[in-house]
Amino acid sequence: MAGVDAGRAQDGARMAADAMAVRDATSSALINGGARLPAAPTGGQGGGHIRAECRHLLLLALPLIAGQLSTVGLNLIDVVLAGHLGAHVLAAVAIGSSVWAIGMTAINGVLMALAASVAQLHGGGRRAESWSLYRQALWLAAGLGTVVAGTLWFVGPLLIQWMGVVPSIAHDATVFVRTVCWGAFPFAIYCACRGLSEGLSVTRPTAVLSIGGMFLLGPIAYVLMYGRLGLPALGAQGSAIALVTVLSLQAAIYATILFRFPAYADTGRASPAVAGAHRPRAEPLLGLLRIGVPMSVTLLMEAGLFIAISLSVGGLGETTAAAHQIALSVATTVFMVPLGLSMAITVRVGNAAGRGDGAGVRRAGLTGIGMALAVQMVSASAMLLLPHLIVGLYTRDVAVSAAAVGLLQLAGLFQLSDGIQVSSNGALRGLKDTRLPMFITVAAYWIVGMPLGWHLAFARHMGAAGLWIGLIAGLSAAAVALGSRFIVLCRRPVAASAPARHEAA
Image (cartoon, rainbow, N blue to C red; front, side):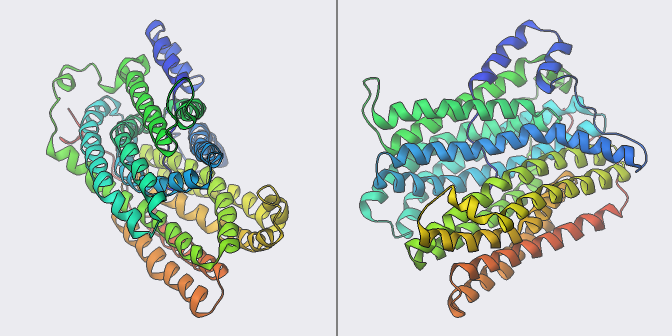
């Protein structure tokens, strides 16, 4: 669930090339589907303003949701291609991908600070200062990518060994990790590019590159994994090489769009002061880290909870493990919608906070949370009322189906709390409030959720259902605490974003 993506490609290249021959107004239409979004509506809290906020959130969120859903497609492509090569390759790719996901989550979490910071600059009428902060974020991305790549290279094999993986599979999983870790650097650059663009309310490039990369990954992975076009069959390593290739293309295309597309010209890109500010500077880097590191920890704590539950379920037998995987797959897929919406909430709340509009902060945050609840009510209803139909899309095994139906209904019970916690977190990110939410997340997941789930599963002999009840408790605790935190902050005065040395060139 970490909301990380790894797939965006060819259509974005056309966007970058076409940008060379169009005027500013045309390029803005190509990116946003018409006109650049204003920072936020101003005024009171009447129904018209709520409707306007819904419209703005949807315009921002739909491309982000499409991008998040493409990650599900990427995972499906990997599973299908690896599965047809046998259980050995499938296991190696699955284990290697789980280790790689930790690195991606860490990078993505830290660099999410850029979108929140740029959104506040944009909302405060300081769009021209965005490019300077982006240039500093590139330095941060380069450092993060290098550190994560090195960590995965040396620590990844130890994690695989710690999992107790059989030696033959562990070898191929290690090769996968030590190959895919070369994608950490381009992935970090891509996240920085995405942070600038989304912070400026320009989200379509993310969707185009995400979906394009999904379609590009399949053919590349097929050729490398199966040994087509005269190349040797590389199996799991071929999957890793394909992913690194797509990530590198995404980073290069997104950077080209930002550096060449006229729609970003008013970000201070051509400013002589910015052009000369090539060196890393401590103030902006530390500012991004202060906001981003807690975000990264928050995402890792949530991802860690689901990983821990999956590992615990693995000891309950094949049938239970398969049922758990089905229910988790459904829950993960539907989670992409509120996750994409939460990213849009971050931008809208950041816009309002940047201009010191307390009413706008409340309107953007509460409207976004309400929209997330509406979406989650639909998914909850489907899981609670149609579990047999949904599970039937995955398996015809009677025993697995029976177990999966029960777990899917439990997943339906935490849909509302999951929607509240992720949207509230998005609103808090827009206010750059990340440290207390980090502690809330740690407490909710690892003091409430996991211990309760473990107790119910093994001390009370409830099995997988006990672990999922613990998950419900953890997500519900996070939803209550994070939602309350946002409401408390909404009651405080919001100061407009003032020029600061760490943000200005």
